[in-house]
Amino acid sequence: MTSATPPVLSLPEASDALSSRLAEGLERVETLIVERTRNEDDFITEANLHLARAGGKRFRPVLTMLVAELGEGIDDRVVAAAAGVELTHLASLYHDDVMDEADLRRGAPSANARYDNSTAILVGDLLFGTASDIIADLGADAVKIQAQTFIRLCSGQIRDDRPCPEGADPREYYRGVLADKTGVLVATAARYGAMYSGCSPEVVELVTEYGEQLGMAFQLADDLIDIASESGETGKTPGTDLREGKRTLPVLNALASTDPADAELQELLRSELKEPERLERALELLRVHPGMAAAREETLEVGRRATASLDALPDSDAKTALIALMDGVIHRVG
Image (cartoon, rainbow, N blue to C red; front, side, top):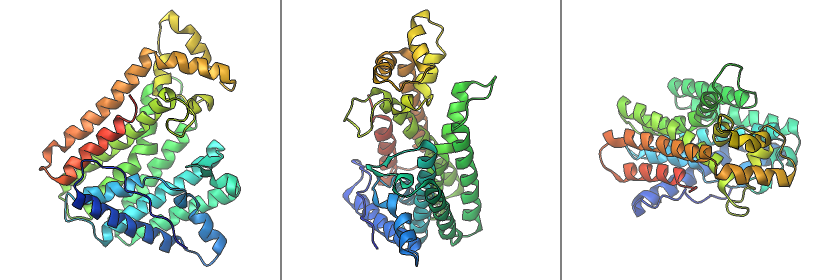
């Protein structure tokens, strides 16, 4: 069984030579994923590859390989690390779809819709195990990092599914959830790329921080897109997070307002938004609210801090591409 190789994440600032190396590396990652998820039971093999075949930009493995270009480049260890990170990400999607009761993922039936909740959970567990098996071949340090990443990822997912504790700042709580749920795996993708390409400990630390900020910026931008986009622009229905009752940063900013003029919006945001008219009204008010602009500025600031951390690196095609990658993430909306 095979899986179609997706295109490399668009990096317009990358040279032709760098883009070619990334494309070749990504083919090797795809091949390894297919090899290591193959099972003697055809049903398990098909279920393992269900979401991998649905597509995606392979954002994390591309980052691993791009960071490796800061060192000695892409080799078998870097490819293995990139495959392990991507399988960890895919495993989390199986669990996410069960928790969200999703019907679609990347335009295809979600795993829980294609099979059932129990199968989706077990396949997610199986992929986590496969990722750990691949990472274990890289040594004890990699295993420790994988375990710590998995702990934070699951902690973030659990906290994301629960209300902010009484007395805590909802916005700080949300930022912490993003760092664990999204930021940590992107950080690990960058960390592995530096570790297994011979970079110095200082560079490993620098790109790990860059990766965590990149992951947070990616999710913050998604929050904005969910509100700001028009139907059909992104392939995602606007207001999906609002309809599901998720309090993202623009929503939390609006709820924190003390302006009496925000009473209607706050009432809507505290209610169920299942009716299309009420959802559309909430989107209309939220799009022009100062809380939306504040969330956009925070997203830009996260990106600025991350790219500034790369100043210590010497100029190279890889550094230029890493800066462009962050710019592309934060400017996906407005």
